[in-house]
Length: 153
Image (cartoon, helix red, strand yellow):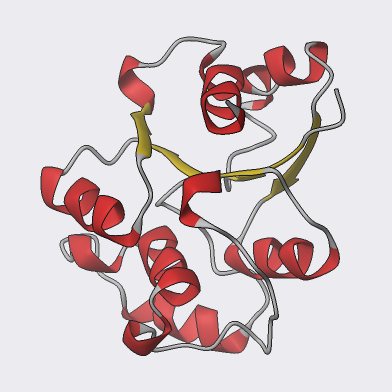
């Protein structure tokens, strides 16, 4: 199987056991640990599936770092990962650029895997076209593999 998966997860190294079932099934998995790294990977490579957390680090981009510093934990609408997806799918609502990124990501190839269980946030994701949303607290080890397989059907 030659399917490529990008997992955008700041704790990807600590949670690498989630990627093991994907790797064992023959998927190629790249982990982006920040928004900046995700943008760079999406500019460099084409992915069949993108799995994104909503709680992300900004990375090296000054623009994303500035936005990250403005976000308070009480402001659910500004989870950095949510803002990244807004920038990707709803550029008219984005307050920051994607660093000149020319990437084509279809919302039906994106899943969100996060601890954020807020129904309003999930509704916004669905409005963007992201239908696959899994909450980490209710997930088991093979969840990333299942997400990828559901998208690739």
